[in-house]
Image (cartoon, rainbow, N blue to C red):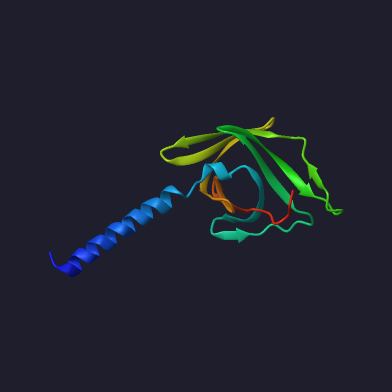
Length: 139
């Protein structure tokens, strides 16, 4: 084997290892807890940006694999109002993919976690993807 071929082989192996590591870290499930703000929603190739007069945040509280979700709003006087309604959920891992199974008083639905780290969350529900970011506001 020539030296240049050896270098190419080593480079390809490192690239493969890097890609495998990047993919396996796409969902850091321990980062779900806390507050999330919708940045935008994709549906059928279109991007929708929420236009709200006051911000609404999703708040996840977890004792793995179960937890609950509720809504928090930022009021005009800069106080926070928390919804009394809580949606319970359970996290499910299936074939290295994470899903959240929600159950409220009115409905049940499932979302797939496409990406999750400390600053970004992407949930897929049906034909929509919800792109969240951590809010800059201190709670």
